[in-house]
Length: 220
Image 1: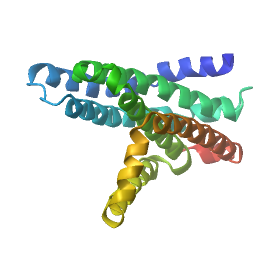
Image 2: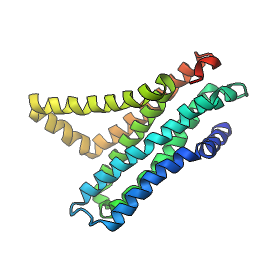
Image 3: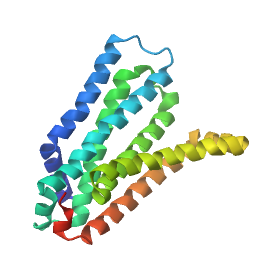
Image 4: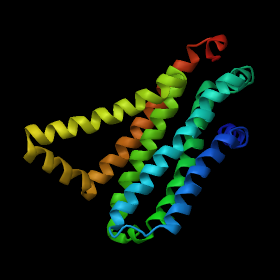
């Protein structure tokens, strides 16, 4: 665990440019939110804040993985007594910390009226969804490189949305019951557990992928 913590601190320091880019996007959103008339519906403001968080996490994944592959940092780490699993896990933890802080600031400033006890389940589901998107971005950057690594997670997300829209067209009653289940307490708990399981699975999968690659294959 100490090794992962040190690697996380290394990521936060070496990738400060990508983090600065993410916080620049966040700062612009906060500046616009403070000067513009807030939406009458707090849910709309919350959705906008989540969208900004999703955009802001893209440069973080870019710098956490792709830039380090270009610089040769990952290859250098493999020459040290550091396991591939620790390298991968530190990327997920660092992304979790950055994305979580941006999400908290964006939603607290952009949609302060949404932070009520009745909306905690909605907030938790949104947070899990954003973290899952971050996990897919990190995994994609490792396995597919720069361009495909950004496109594949977006295509997967669009595929899920399109599948639900198609279900609404073909079986509206089933789609509505599925939606009601998702927004319930047990449904939210299931979403949180599924997010953790998927994140753990992707971490193991990317770790195994990294172990199967020669150091020379990790350069971009």
